[in-house]
Every structure is written in C-alpha cells, then in structure tokens.
Length: 472
Image (cartoon, rainbow, N blue to C red; front, side, top):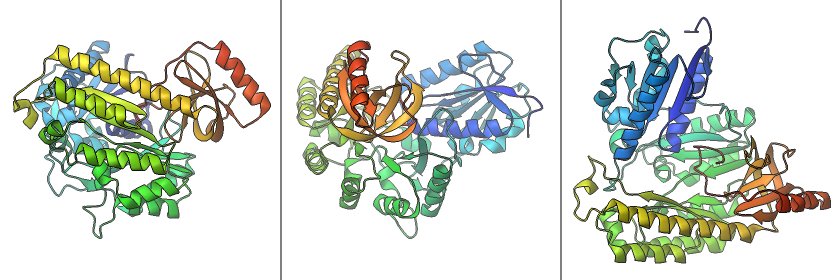
C-alpha cells in the first residue's frame, strides 16, 4: 500500500536492544511503503512508540513519549506497540490522540495493520490489537537485512523467557522461550553478509536457552558452529548470556574461534547469595566467580560486562557491601548498574524490606564509580596492543574523530579519514577514559596518534548498550 507522496514517520524505542531491533524492522517496512523517517523531535504524519514495561518508571516514560508525539502534531497518527502495550493496552488506548495499540505479536506482524496506518486518517477511538502469548506460540521475526545508520547488523535468534526471576515482568509480556530455526538463522546471516555487514550481533531475551524448543534440539554452541561453517560472516558477537548457559562447548568456541568477538555480558544482579535466592537466580556467587576466573584465564583480553541491581527488597548494608566486595574481586571490564524499581505483577513487589530511594541512589553511585574505574583499568591495559576493531561511519561529536569498537568491546577514536569496516587497529594512547588508535602499525600513524593524544580534549569512555546505539 504505497503512499502517493512520502509521508513522514518518527519512531522511538524505550527499553532493551530487542525493542530497538524490532523498531528497525518496523521502520524498514514503512520505508518500503513509501514513508520517510524524521527525528522523533520533529513534526511527523505518523509516530510509532515502541514501549517498555520492565519497571513502573518505564511505563511512565512510555506514556510521556506518546503524549510528546501528540503535542508535536495533534493531527498525526499515533501507534503504540511493544511490551507496555502488551501488558496494559487499555491505559495507552485511553490517551486521547492514540490511533492504534499493538501487542508484541502484532508488532512483529506490523504489515498486517497497514489498513489503519496506511490510511493516514485519525481514528475516532484507538483500536486495540493484542493477542495472548500462548505457551506454544511460534517464533516470529521481522526479516531485517538492512540497519540504516548502523555499521553492524543485529539478529534476534530467540524470544521469550522460561525463568521466573522475582523482579522481572518480561516472561508475561514476551512469552515462553522460542527459537528461530537454525536454517533460517544461517540464511539471514548470509543475506546480511551479502548486504555488506562485517559483524552480526546475535540477540535474544534468554539467548542461552536457544534451541530447547526445537526438534531436533540444537543448543547455542551448535548454532554458532553452523553459522561459522555455512556463512562467510567475518565477525559474530554474542549478546547477554546467563552464567549457567555458558556451556563448555560454547566456552571452547569463544576461546578458540577468531571470528567470535572476545566479549561476553554475564548478568550477575547481586553478589550476595541471600539476595540471589530471593531473586530466584539460578546460580550462586561461587559458581559465578569460578566461571569468570576461568574465562579470563583462557581469554586474557576478554571484555566482560555484568548487570547488577541495587536496592532489591531485603538488601541491607551488609549484603550490599558483600556485593561491592565481590564485584571488586572480579576481573570484569564494565558494569551496567540498575536501581531496583517496584514492578506491580512481580513477586518482588510484595516482598518485605523495600529499600528507600535515597539509599538505592547512593548505592547506585557507588557501583557506577566502581564500573568506571574497572573500565579505565582495562582500557589502560590495552594501550600498546594491536587488535581488530569495527570502524563506524559515525564521527565523535566532541573530537571529530572516527568511532570504532574493538572485538572485546572497547571504544576507540581514530583519525577521521579512517576507512569504515573491520581493520587491525593500534591502540596507542588514552586521554581521559578514551582509547586512541591508528589503523596499521606505521610510524606515521603512531605520530598522528601521538599528536591527537596531546591535543584533543578529554572525553569519556563508557560501556555500550549493544543494539541500542553503536556508540554513545
């Protein structure tokens, strides 16, 4: 249903990298239908808000973005999709100016709802199209082969979650774990490589559970072996994995295969066993520590990130101190620190020992400082080495230099003339927390980098949310 003239569409994403991936899929569909994308801060004919519901604050932020769109252009069509829409569609439909509310299955089938979107007319009342997520719901995906504005590609290979962590609402809005068939994964990656992408990030809600629903079963290690054997993809990056899902076979692949990025993100959430039990996490701190130590022994330059939640109900000063000491002892390279936010519909919301917000905020700052220190220490250790990096098209706004991402998840600034794509990069210096590099081991390149090291302003280097933005 092509539009007669290019209509403007503005899209925004709240929450996780899977939401970002799915927003990209909706955008590509709309581009094929004749729409032209504009920034979400501008007037558009159609607004698409992909919502998050992981916390009460996420719901609030989602509603704020809906109202912002309506203020920008009261005559525009407004479509609300995603996890917030799945959980509480009526609350979004009740906002005056909303035309269409789509749940997570309907979001993936966005093309089926162009009868409303393609018509271009405001609706007298919001249409709600939300179907239940049944245990046997199939894996569904938006067939993405282009990622406008991204040098890397992303592929969702798994959806849903079978765990019941007491703080998490996601299983109820994403459904049970289900997997993309391996043949389709290989085909999608082959097409992404044909489109010119040199790195593909494999993603999922609980990616380590890949294949448990398939017949015959195939685990994540087996899938990665097929990808390496049947495609020409130069580089694969694994997104977040539970420590219990990092099987010996997967560890062997990570250590031995040069085409797999030496980078892992292993959620911890707490370093105190009592809190881990209350969270219903499927591991203890001792197992986590042993795994992390073994990984860094086998892969000395491994980039290793962790998630941690501060202020979970029952977290007293002693258990928080235990968590801080535990994280300090680990050879991790960055932290993602989250403040616990009470989420109606989760078991944690009813637990005793809710932590005051001022205490949560103070603990958050302590761990963020720990994360910054560990990130800098790891970056300093890499100076003087040569490593593979993905050089992005995007330039750093402060320095005008080219941005790049190493295989082990370090941000690097390169001369602006550096060619986009995979390259061997010399890490020659550090300014503030930013690594500086040059492409190739030439004396001239090192001289340029030396000049840059002494002349550019100090800039920050922090962990990247894979899939949300290539570099921040």
